[in-house]
Image: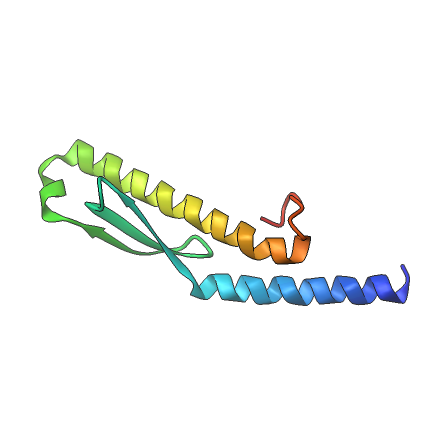
Length: 99
């Protein structure tokens, strides 16, 4: 591998590290039931908080479905966030394992 390629690889690795650090501090909010259940998740897909409106507690089956839907919504948003951040490095190419 020539020196330019090595420098470029090192630069990409540094950019990737920076993006991963940024994702750790960023959050997204997923919701379900028109905001009855809300989940805040970091860009690294760690759930930080769950908020449930009191009326959602009346139907346990519905509540379980709403919590799952809100978590899935937040998870999808974190994946989109990571993909948009990674596109800076990949130039918009879809490279498996980087998103």
